[in-house]
Image: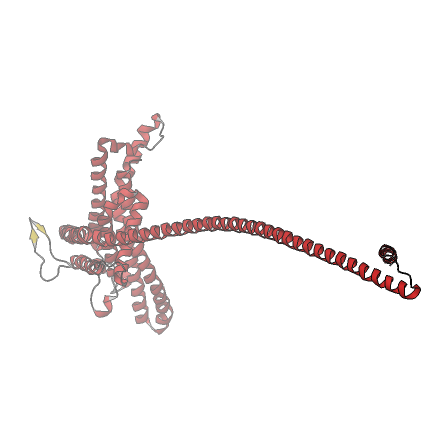
Length: 164
Length: 261
């Protein structure tokens, strides 16, 4: 086994060269280069987690904004409903008053018209009586030659008119 | 290994000085640049090139950067899972350890023998794995005593141990603690050695049975070859798992030092 057979003549060279090469590996590569490589990887990890955190925060903000929007939406909806109800009430009230006014106007016009009609019909009746009494007196005079009094003719006409 | 004929499955672990550096020495110690050292350098260079590809530092990574970041992220998660957030400061060490062992294991498995080269797995030498294990163990000791002082010895008295049991438990825990660097280093060494020996033995079967005749070649040789394909895949898995186990145990031990139960 050369590992044992050659140990006396090779151990010093083995140890020397191992220390030289491993020293190079440790000091130049291990201490000089590996921290930079690892630093790059760590910086990347930090950036990734930072970006993820930022994205998460943005998500939370978006959720918040949405909730806020929903609340404001609901608020403005109720406000709009209130405004609408108020406007409806006002409109109903004003149309009611206008209707009442118009009703009163119409009623007064109807009453005036009825009064006019009544007056006209009374006048017409009175005229009819006079005309009918004249006609009756005429008819009596013609038929019997008796001059009927104005009053009797008028009464007779009234009685006939009352009987229709 | 005389029975296996000309093929010695242990020869792959032989260390040979390269480029005539046999007698290069430092303070009296031989530091010849060997095939083992060459593969250590290769592992370091391949790892360097790999990590350079991850240095673009783009916010949206390309494939290469993604691969490098995946590996560092893997080590980061391993440390955070075992030690907690305080484990981040060990990322450079555990990453270096894991990737260095992983590349050593994988480079040693490359089929370079097809091109006449001799691949070498330095993690199959306990001189190499031992240094890595002692290094991890030393860091555990240093961190433990630095953070907790002599209170670190309470690691050897598990929570809720009855008072009369302490004299018994303490030595047991101490021994199990002291065994850690050996288990850490030997596990890697044994796993890599065993796998490579098995592959070489089966490869020897293929060659020797083919030389012994067509009948043997078609039966024993084909069966061994099919087995080799499967075991090669298994060895790749072992290469990754052993590197992972080394890094995992290092982080578990570091957890003891960092968060003294």
